[in-house]
Image (cartoon, rainbow, N blue to C red; front, side):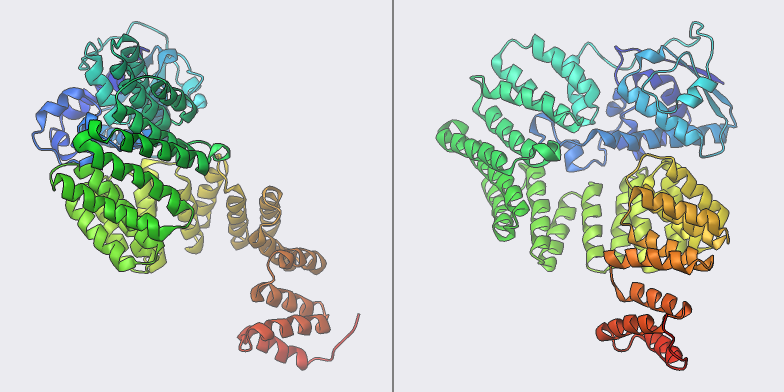
Length: 590
């Protein structure tokens, strides 16, 4: 079966892939309702097919009332949903798919992300799907696959269907903002910005385009839009909101070197003055703006370690919103304040209060997976691992397409000693994202511990080819695999690779010393273990050196290390046994 996918710079995210989404939904009608949160990305018309979707307060909030927007990487969960059911449909129908891509140089950035992820998925599992490209877009990371699978650029056989009402730019802009499709949002918002006829409309759009740029990792562009608003004589509420967002830029979103807590606080203080000066104009929204301005200050106070005041602001703010507006208004804003209070209560080690707040929060918004994850993390911190697993499982029921959630639950299972479940979770994470770094690392370690050495080496070698900040750990683990395979020379080479990247990597130094000891190069082993002890002179490293000294016949040096160990732990069994064995030998001096 052949599908032709035609890219166009004028398309919106997922629009080019309509033939494939039609193929999926034609045999999976339940997807629309059961997975509405994800399926609605593939066709805007699906919104009309589900009357009461199970959406979180955040997802269901009207555009004009939104205060929380997702980061654009949320779309990877939609990719996982899309590919999972595409592959599942192919297997059920026993089809063989050939997918031809046209106009690849007109790919949107989201198209590039989707295609790269698609290629990664296909490389990891058996399937009957092959992708062909008319040309290689320079942004595609899997260029080797594309080069191998090129086709002659004939006219596409399938005419592109269009379910996107692009004539209604405002509706499509709101949809793009709500679904974290910020490439679309920036383009559509910019068009609407230039078409706007009133200054309030321009400022409203500038505010939202700023948000889109922040969450698309372009905070410097967002700041330009925010300052445009401040330079205009526009609606006071828009200025208050923009000042809040400028504060968040300098406290959270800018690169680390540009963060400035003082500047962030000044923006909030300017907003506070604006709120008080315009109390009458703000009317019933006065309390709301006052509370949320203070919520911004609570974030800054929390970062300065002033947890008690920050906590008071969150608790009191929620009470003010609830008492002023009742239980049916500003529910999203209330949920944010309650969630923030769990963070401040945890910082104060008021864990019972934090858990009470989570209970309240999850009754208010049971469909927001992030809240289940946050409580799962708290339960892990408290050592209540069964409850942590329960909450991760609840989050996965809401979003079964998140590799990060499977990995997080797998880590908890490992702590519990439930290695079979941990391994299964890492495998599921890698099914969705074959390059998920933490899952590859943790999965490889389990394979190593289970003596599945060839498989472990395969996993670690794959991880070594990825761009990560843990390459030193990866090469150390490769060295451990070679040690178990009795290939000491290869192990030594791998440990040196780890230390070339991280010269003070204590674990690799200890492992390298062990490898040289096995090779009977005790002088080299001693040199390396001395370097390790300079980094961390813990009792284990001292014992290792003491044992090495004893093997080299340097018994006085060995006894000195043993004495240092026993001064810290007088009942250290291994040190006492080594001391006893040395005392039975004549002491030699060299």
